Length: 174
Image (cartoon, rainbow, N blue to C red; front, side, top):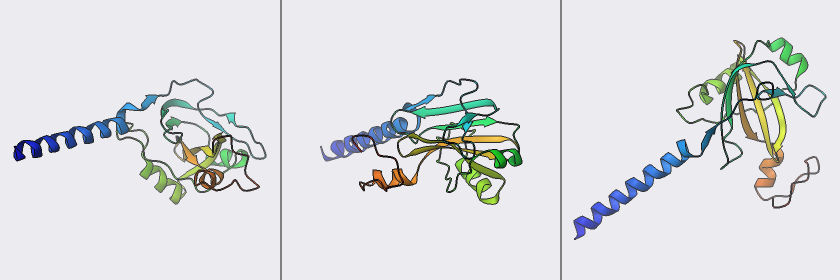
């Protein structure tokens, strides 16, 4: 009887572990339906609203389970010089790891390119959802990457602290 219970316990643990893995890596993600002209937008210098930029070959994933699961890849002909002159840079950009099956987005590669200067990060949309920014990184070869990242105000408020004076007022329930 003891062997049977031990085997049953191991089998249950394996099934539960496999189920959790599947849910986290595959189940919750949906493909983002591309809407040409709106998928990739950057915030111009001195502005508060983003504007669409030229891009091709957009691929994206998102999930309702978390606002920071959004990832996207695209290509653009815009140069770093053009982007630097026209759009707000994003300091502290940290690409989030995407599921392995979404192979166009390699967070390690993007992070290393940002550190070396081969890619630059720009503000896509500030507070796309309270405390979450959409960040756009563009490599010098024209490959682009998009993800959601918790901003400074979000980090403070999500940690249970009151919003600083220079942050927008959080919506009810935060």
